[in-house]
Image (cartoon, rainbow, N blue to C red; front, top):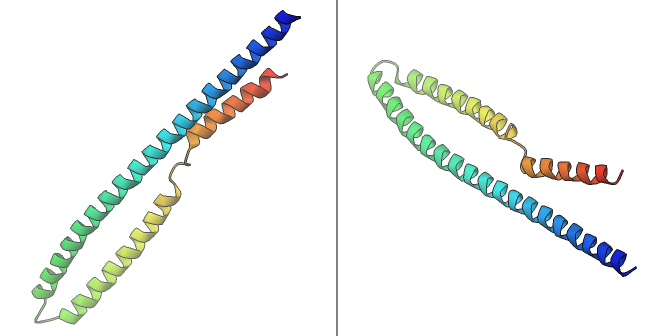
Length: 127
């Protein structure tokens, strides 16, 4: 009787050790995914701000150039046309940004997939 009790206790210890290892691995995977997502968002923010600054300066200089070019003849028409063009471009870019933000991958998808595999294995082991 002692051997079966010791065997049962040993089996429970191994099961607990296995479950602890699984949980530890999943938490590490979750932390890695969180860190990768933070790095991706930081990079996107930096590139977006740099691009915004460069495009803004380019558009400002180009607008001034065109207005000076048509200063004598059609300066108000040029200012209105360029204003409309920039407004329409901004609206288009805002729609593209919104669609890009909606298509990002699901956060923690790898961790959720691994947990689903673990659940399926545990449920399959009891049958």
